[in-house]
Image: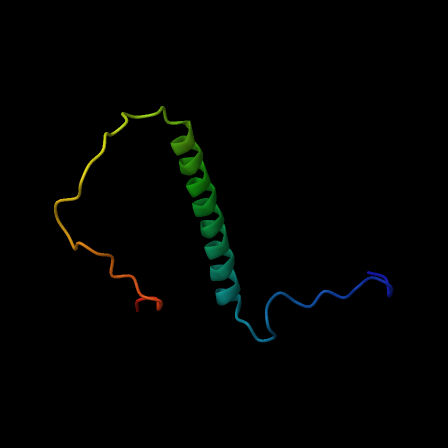
Length: 74
């Protein structure tokens, strides 16, 4: 690396154990595979043929009004 190239800080803080680094790399791989799979499933969903069209309906159970508030629930 020459002096005019920007210095890239190390990815892991000084003192990080090799065990942690290895586990974090494996976790990152698993996260990538999961994201790829979610994208594959989403694409398959978009390729689905249209289903039956439902006619008008009325909900017969549950509250009659929405209980939405301006604050998110916890």
